[in-house]
Image (cartoon, rainbow, N blue to C red; front, side, top):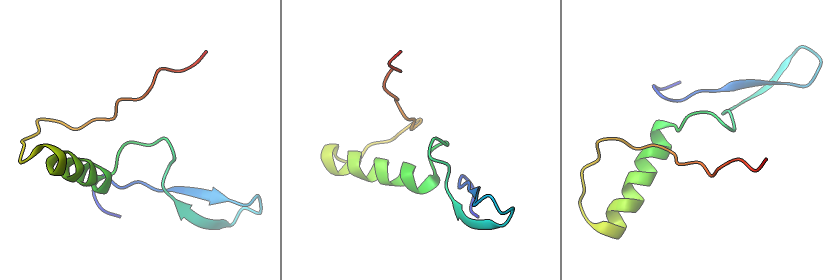
Length: 61
């Protein structure tokens, strides 16, 4: 598992791990950040980034 990549175990109730899957609501992975940067650069030219973060919509409540 690389830096920035996380996995969580999925159990089928038998106590045996059936597979590994990334957490659905976990932090962005390195690959996701690279992809986002590539998309923005293709649309707006060569840019520098101080930070890349996820802006989530407000929770309906």
